[in-house]
Length: 427
Image 1: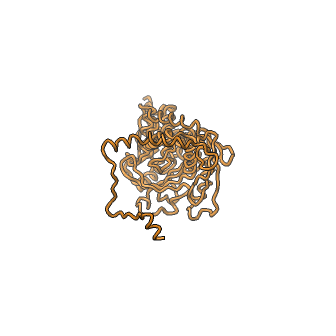
Image 2 (image 1 turned 90 degrees about the horizontal axis):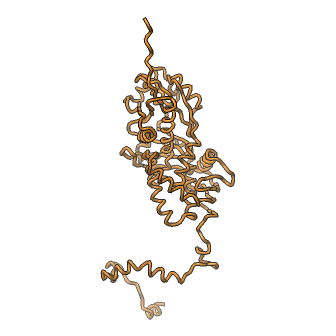
Image 3 (image 1 turned 180 degrees about the vertical axis):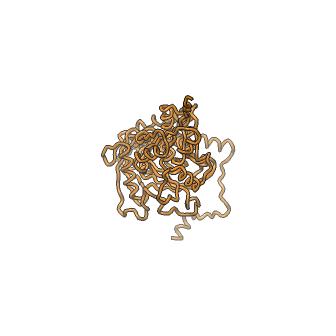
């Protein structure tokens, strides 16, 4: 009797971190009938040795394990565009986690197409927003790809996951689990859960990992100069640096002075509010410097229009709409504005604050001779008379047309005016 022909299994590419959730996901996906391929993305996180993570994936049952160094890709295609847009979700959050998700989705789709996989998988929960970001981005890149979400579908508690891991010989961390949910990359660190879920609680020291307590920061400030070319930082204190080195240097320097701590309650995409603690020393420093440089290089109307665009840019990034026609158009607008954003900004880093001390640019439209009130003033003061008449004409016409002209005060306002002779008498 001829032996049975082996049934060829479909392949799935799993975003793999080496943690409990994605490690357990390997045998779980195998039980669903898939051959599992893992993809581990290096986006600058403080993780264990990447090769060890790949080896763990193979030992756990993956047929192939990929490790991609995506740090430069993340900087060039996500972080720098976001910096040029001064992107801060709800005016506060520098989007460190949000930038990595479309990149991870792209890497998953890339490996899936390369390996002939029919699906990708992630370890996001059913109430997280990363599930939305990854799935929307993946669908935008490959509408035919199937997306699986084991953690969302298996309904296991953490204790049940541990039991499942033991049953399937999945290596699990032997150290005490962190009470927080952590995520980090080049642009910063996110921390949530645990005692942070009550917004009345002050974040304990254990919630921070990149910054010192501002109260314990050095008493002597650090002064740093950052040079920008077309909106992109290229040098620190006159020394040229690539993106990875530059962000790393500022994370270390600004973090040592307590700069970059963010404690906020944000409106999540999935419909509820969440208390989040972020640490983004380099991001906060660079955005502060970049915004300052724009004040002397961009025209007034451009800055106003760009402010509206910046808010939309941040919202779309947060909501997972990176690969959309609107985002493409927004980035084209932002790139055009940055052609003149060249120069150097000097900042003081002190006790949790990054404060601009000075800025200069060959493309500055700030003119000393127009701004000064001292000798050398070239402003045409006489022209102000006609300008004010024309500028105020619509308001004046409205008042005249509607017979509004009398001025009244509330009854409790007392008139303290004295006639000239009364002043003389009083003196």
